[in-house]
Image (cartoon, rainbow, N blue to C red; front, side):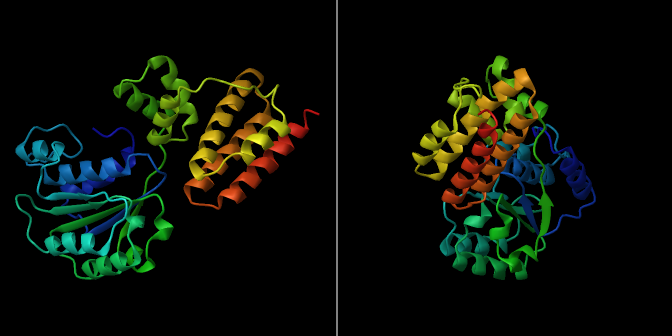
Length: 290
């Protein structure tokens, strides 16, 4: 079941009960916070034969949904969404649902539509079937065509709370000893939290031993977006360890700067600009030690 996003659960529970689902939504927000999972749970809830919205249910429709076999729920999760793919599900969108009241199309990472695919999809949105619901899931809503955005209801999902992240990580079987600390530094994202857990990151160079020259050397070696992001994550963890013992506002501000670098990288900011911003902030902080 869904952890967190209680506001959205309340909203869509009422929508389902009042039979007022619209034809198209955009689920947007930070990457890794459960937007796609929420879309799948919404579809299951709307098709539930027992009317259980966001609750456990063993009806045949819910069972098929959990097995990813419900024919009235289609999930598009391609690395690149091309025009042929759009034409495929668009033709199916005008066919009546097989069993339920609605037919759902969940398009994950909708910003990955090519220009031709987006224009083709727009035509489908302009003449929707009354029983079809499109849910576009994205963390880059600015990349969607304005004409597509204007035809959809945008639902902005917030970041998960640290205790919600901890609950999810525990359910996934991660060790309780490190779950709480990782949850507090994962910026509300399950994706980020799992990344940090898998890294098995141990505090390395402390702030006391850190020099700008060392940071400069490390940053200049970084070759791609993932390497920059990984370095910033690990730097954040090491600064956090120092902050826990000093509660120095300078470190807190630097940690916020590091989170900003990560956010900018997620929105495809130029890598060299991100590295320059990181070095500028590191120099400001480390110069105070001289």
